[in-house]
Image 1: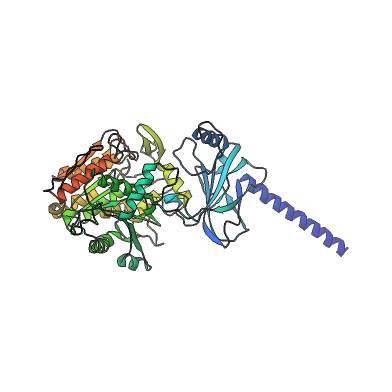
Image 2: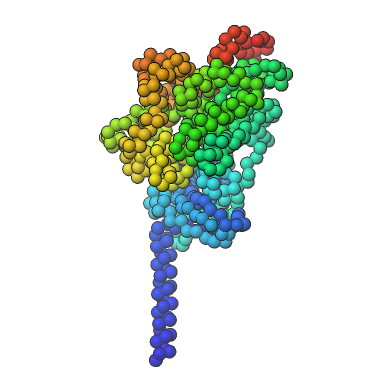
Length: 555
């Protein structure tokens, strides 16, 4: 009897275990779990943010076919783009100490954009897994060392838990000065011509290193003009160029080569250009002194600039130091000029991020009960447009950024620069990611420390002598991110103060084509460079050579 009881108990126990296992499988299927295995792509345990991307197979395959001129073409990768015609669904989770051969299940309903995958219409989907090992997908997308799976066709809802395998590590980035053979010949030749005149900046900042408790390096490129080596006694004005969000040392070489080519063709005057890299683990630090990112403005003005002036033949005076930047780089240059007016002789800031928080890409952060997702009438605040067509909303952008990871995204980047530091050591969020509600206490901190228009209003009597006439701001009237609104408000403030400024609202230009003049995609930059040179060399007779003009010029 005892033996039979043990046998029955064992059978019952086995039945219960099978039932529990079946229930877990059923639950996984109901909640759209997807299993990911770490294969030979990694030989040791690794960590990061595991991302899953899915897109309707028919839509993806049709788009790939269209891009290949009607020929059938396999879909090589799936990425997040909330503003495409067929946006991908994304799910994510953090993983740590993930050993090769182990599997991880992602609940695609738990942390997902635009919604849990159980809400996806039934059908065939293309799915891909990516392990973002450096937590920088939000800033620059996939990068060296990230682990990826093949694009796999999966039917959702699935009858069993699908498994993807991380089978490949992305290779290290190649030399940014070497264009692929498929690139236009002009680009390859331009990079090769500029490379000997571009010098890497890799400066360990004492101030930033002390703030972080570890070595922090400031990086960039110094571009010397074509006649720099031949004219050993000649000194040159300097342009400090800051990149926009997503920029880096590797991604600016095309612009560097274009500037060099324009100087060589005498379409731009001979100046030294310093292309500053303002990227970091938290996004873009915008060269602002911040309780979260550290004293980047101080490090630039008191450490890096003196270091460069000691090593290159720079004018080294206020009328020979200029600023130019676009987008987040435009805000950085506007900030540096207004914060350090005795250092710089003028800024030419293009399409800068919001400089008056009464219009933060269309949202008045100071309004009672402000909300960045919805207006008072319940309508959504747009964030991205193509002229009159809205491509995406503030809410879409914020919620995708949250799924992709807490570091490096554009909106989180603002908080790393502008917000007070919270008890957890991270910046206090300016708005609630679920509801869009604005925290007025955080906004008050933003205003007191980083609202450029507010700061100018409060300190204009002290700033006027060193700042008047130095602000030049250009933006398109159809700016992709609605940044023309904030520029109008800044202009109104400065006009009210009686300041001498130059504001140019370029009709129908967007964020991406603001610099275009006719067929010249760097036309505005060339105009800006001559305006700077006129300040640094007011007695010069040097004039720009029109493209195709063989006339010689003299200094």
